[in-house]
Length: 165
Image 1 (cartoon, rainbow, N blue to C red):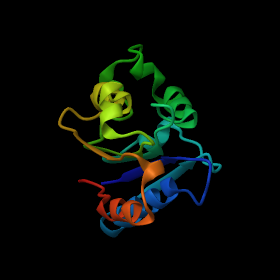
Image 2 (cartoon, helix red, strand yellow):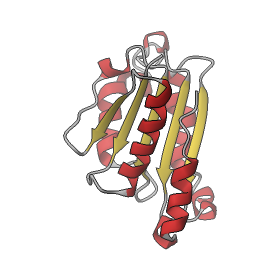
Image 3 (cartoon, one colour):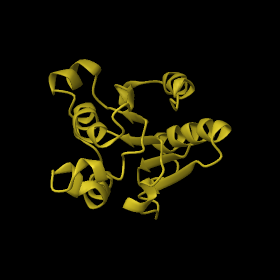
Image 4 (cartoon, one colour):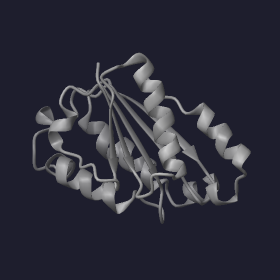
């Protein structure tokens, strides 16, 4: 079993980095083969990095209702042929992924996100999960109203982050 954690945020001392650190610590306690890629901090995502990955964890802030451009660009580069249907699903680089976990934050409330159609969650569930193993599980962990929360609220969420298996 191999775990790949992909974090997308340009700042090393962000709450997103803290979420990534929590996920990585948890994953490494049960899976020494855990790899962490930090987009925006010099790391690049390559399609070959998905080889043999059974647990894929994505950590990012939702900005303007969407994934950060650095993450979208990396996904387009590495998974584009499968996302837009040009390559056969049987050859998807994510076909070994049995668990897809998304950990994200929103400045808006859960209600506002629902009214917008939950675009981030729908992208992962409708597009990326279909590229994974047929029996893959999906976990969505989101903190809403980030801009209006206290330090205790953020710490509380941080303590609930799980890297599902």
